[in-house]
Length: 292
Image (cartoon, rainbow, N blue to C red; front, side, top):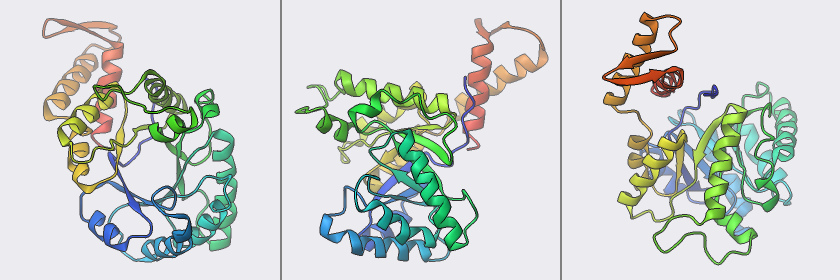
């Protein structure tokens, strides 16, 4: 199991950048990280005012929760305006949509110049890339190892469906169709290959919390380390799903203790079952996750 750089968020809640009311509500909902959005949730005409509002929110003292900003794609005229507006107010990070690795590197260079101009410590502003929103990006999920500033990769099912000309991305039972299952899997593999956190995409049916719980538990079991949300009601469900249970932690401690007591062993017995080095690695990763 690859080492993944610690990422301090199970739940990442989107907040429209032009809604101070929604931001105020989001600050008290228990989300580990807020994503102040300047992209899809903000109408074209409202983007300049949204930039001002986001910069103002970032400048307030005692944020209480990490505040990141989703900017517009780099190939739009909005991206540099977004960055020049918000970087002086020291966001904790930037989310980059519709991107490949070369875009993430270009963002790094922009941030380096803007940090220097604002007197901000170099590379203190981190990045997340939404890495599956264009057809080209699906072929390039293995490109991210060594990307500067990168803390996480996530994926998006809606934009890639639109880009592929799809009429929908789920079947009659609500499961993702094959192309979008593939995008999710490639995101997971690409993130782990790069040593950064894989983050699950949003679940859009924000009133269906039972289904959200199943999705969050399944994606955590598959290896994702957190999940994005679009409504405060989703946050407690996501936080529970991505927090190891006491039973899981107790078992992981027993696995680690067993191998510590038998140095050099490759295979051991525990509760009538065989455990080996992959079990040990998973146990250590689980214990580390509890402290992220």
